[in-house]
Length: 508
Image 1 (tube, rainbow, N blue to C red):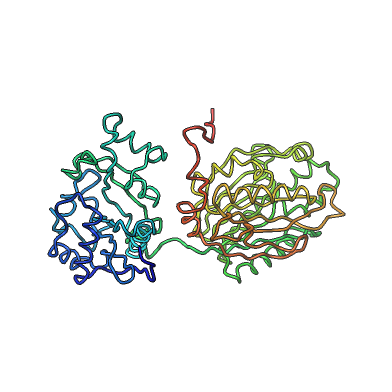
Image 2: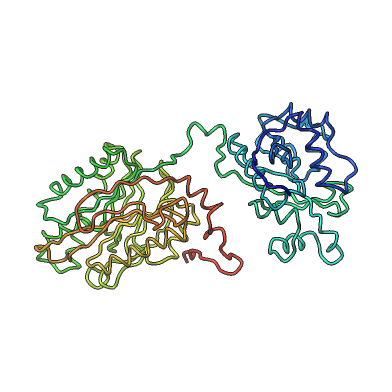
């Protein structure tokens, strides 16, 4: 092969036909019939954008031909002849929902240059541009005839997938993120190498939006507002909410979608119960929670921001729990609970663990909340990820830096292993006149997965340690969709579900 000076992709034209035939004859020397000029001309006229060729130094050396079809007319069990309209391509429909692959080949003299990958990538880009659901095509398994006497097509495909057998067509397709949907008998009559079996392969467009919902599709960029709260004395609940409203107003002025407060940020109000023991004081503090819930809901509506209230003590059937609320800006309110209670919280305050774990739908994505200690249990994050969580919020209350680092380090791990964003915030300062509350340490932060599209250290943004402030950070939920399918590693997709599982136990 001579030195290559230029490679480019383009759309097939009639003038390219002779070079196309040379490449096709070289690619399929065993065939005795090829695409004729009228057939290619018809294909170009029907769908010019779908006929992609690769030029090397101005010469056609390969192509990817395709049409758009309404896939519900054919479903998975079809033949190549049927879906191409007896090779007339009359089945092409500009209003279809699937890009159907007709042909892909590369001149053998130019293989090894990853030109096939370029063609497949161009098809994927076209699929995304046209907002089609998927790319589907039938593939040959040309090496199957050498194994047909000893294994079924299903066993053959499994061995190719595990790289125990190399198939020049199927191995390449699997390497390009296509998955086998079906095995079709009689897909291409006369294909002796494949024993007339075809593999129906599909690549899903994760960016596809149904036409009827595109105008109202969900947000892609989401703005997070984290409140690093200063523990200071307050004379009353009204006095404390002056400060709360100030922060909510500030976060709203930046057009944030969420405002996150810390765990038990209302601790300063324990001062009025200094004459009680620790457990009694926390139960007394819980009397404020119903009113605080109402106030937060009103603020969420007035300031047009979804408020995650950190956590508050709550009495439910005489059981003291550590709970919080998601106050949606549309007026809805959801409750979440702390599930794991630390030894000190149990001993000093008598708090009991909750048993509610779920993902919450918001107008800015699917979110989960784990309160402080809960983030140190990876099973909870994984269960939320299985429900489609995109952002995990972690309100916390830590007294020392080593306690904070447990929360921070585990939160970063949850972002990586669950391919999601994680936002954490806590309180700072101390309350010398409050008997039942320790000192506080915090550095609020927003963490990301660690891959090329994200910050190399997995930190989107972080606050100044132990300083009262708000932290504003934007996250792009679309990046998570791409990570799930195309990440350097795919922690969710690559789990060995055949070997282990994490699930919630049913209530007795």
